[in-house]
Image 1 (cartoon, helix red, strand yellow):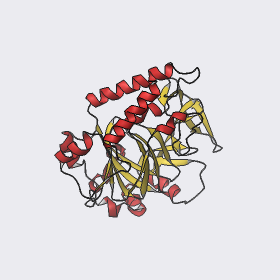
Image 2 (cartoon, one colour):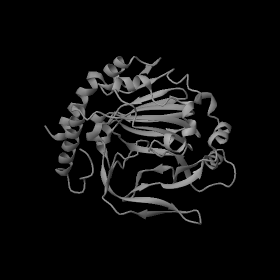
Image 3 (cartoon, helix red, strand yellow):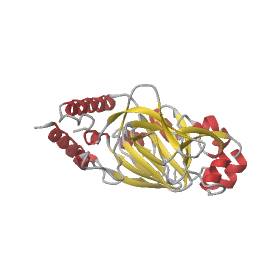
Length: 320
């Protein structure tokens, strides 16, 4: 059997065993042991309702409150010409311009006040920016999710704050974290693909670069020194199936996470994210266990690379 046939058999078997065709809902915060057994260990996503109802942030975090509480704070903001930060553009993996701005100025842009900008702004600094840049807001949320910390036996490695325009999009990628993504206001729309879909997800190697906005408002791409970055060139919103035909075999799952809801996004799941305008969210990253599941995924990655290398000339970046 060809590698593509073996991969398809593997995916079909996995899907038939337990993969849901939609993301299930839990109506209340779970018992830690039960959550570990039912969701973390089998690496399955779910949406948890009524887990944030006690957070003051749900009622407090209006633009007026944020201006009063932390409006003068200077934070790091991702600025791009098209809303795509950390994404493939041509031969480059382009990162955003990281611009220091006050939170009030970001809110002004989101609310359409002042001069129209030729850029898209997104507060998305993934370095525990809630704790590092906006500690004044931490009393409005939990420092960690107690049942998740109990289930994993550790505290989160990062707690991140997200705020941006509707045109700010997160390109498809995966993380080595167990992720609890909590929407405070607005709505987040996710496209999720399980780790077992890796054979059908194309990767390429791209020269790193960053966006830079010139004084005339136009953007340029500035090449950076360093090793090429492996990234996914495919846009799941409009996949080029002629260039990446194997993606037809992938099994994406879509879900919307509304204000007051929490998505459990398991480690190594591929995900693409859109949002409503002015959406505010907080997420908790817990580093994954580098156990047998991680080893199996690394084996799958290696097999995909070997199959690609044996494929037709010029197609080495496309998973078979």
